Picture 1: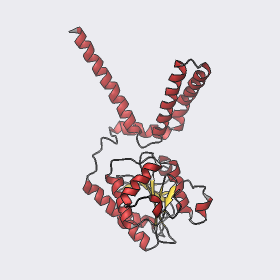
Picture 2: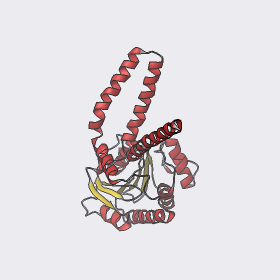
Picture 3: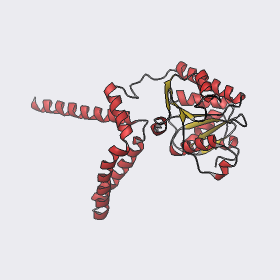
Picture 4: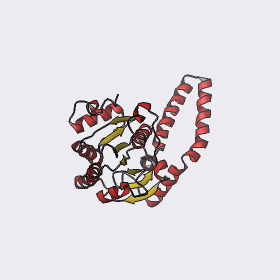
Length: 283
């Protein structure tokens, strides 16, 4: 009887700790801290191997590094930690949200696709950033918060020439328009700057530092370009944009690597290779 009670307590203890770790990981999804955790996990594995092999200097170095990181992390990731605690206080998490239905995804796709079609037809420059796993809080926190429904009219009005926000980017996720007037890092690519303006360089810049999918409407040419993982594909067709948006809102796979992106976009666009529509810019 005592043995069974001890086993039961152990199971409850393990379940509680597992749930706490699970909730923390869920709250970290969509922030830069996810990448940090991957780096810390790698360092921990390397430290374990160094201790096992009795590499004293490497063990000391890794222990000192992890100690320094433990002091620096709360300072560097203060916004992410604050957001995590706020979410925890509200009892919300990303995985606890209701999964988007196909009808909801269709509505969002039609709203964004309709806005892009209008902007392209009227040669109104636009920059839409679709956030994925890597959070973009450092860019939305310094911009104009929107937290509004994804509607065609709102997207068009934001990029209308007389709107104060039209020069910046709009960052959105699968649920809402997060912020407008976002200023993004510019890519240092001389071969791109000769042919494209600030919007395309900003799209490439944010795609280099995150896994975001970026759609650009050219004010000069009236066409749509796509930036992912530091690669640019130009003159994207309307049906390709719709398929890409369908994959973003309704798809389950999160695209993280360039090879995966190329394969995914190839399936979406019904082409054998993404480079066929890239004008030679995708290498």
